Amino acid sequence: MTPRRRAAPDAPTFTERARRQQLIDCTIDLISTRGYPATSLSAIAERAGLSKAAVLYHFSSKDNLTAAALTQVLEEFSAHVGERVARETNPRDAVVAYVRAMIGYQQAHRRQVRVITEMLLDDHGGTRLKTPGSHDTHGRLQALTDLLMEGQKAGALREFHPQTVALAIGGAIDGVIAHWLVHPDLDLDAAAAELVTFTLNAIELRD
Image (tube, rainbow, N blue to C red):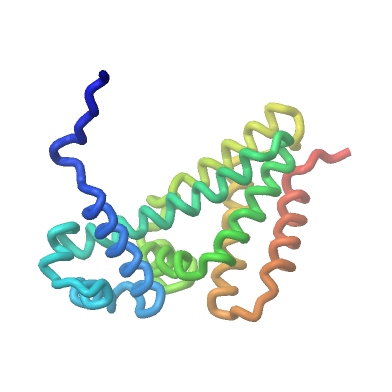
């Protein structure tokens, strides 16, 4: 009989993992409704029905807890986009899937978008990064640049500077989402269609 493997001595138990997830969920809720500055450890503890000491048992500081919440949001966002891009075999369709997935995720996950804007932007929903030039949201720019380069190598896209075009497409997406966050009556489906047209005009082969 093969002996059962024991978990690593310092590995969190199922209960501890569940509690950590509860705290992350509460943090996302609070940041999305109150904003990052008002999301204190005391507020998180109250929302979770725990003592502040219990929160600190799982996360040693507010910074560690909010960083964990942001990491989860970015990983889920990245996975959503990556899965939809991976379904496409044609480079052109993969880029279109990227644009639609970027808009679609944010349309369906407004709370998570608020976490990103609260924690990474210095104008609470605008477009100015707290550390301009030093942050590529979860490798987003590089992922799109690589996608464009692959399309060029396959001969499916025209010749252009991939990073510059990736910046233009990413900036257009960010601009639409920033406007939508302030003006939720914006028809985001129509905006997504226009962004696809904008993107195809930038990357498609020309006669």
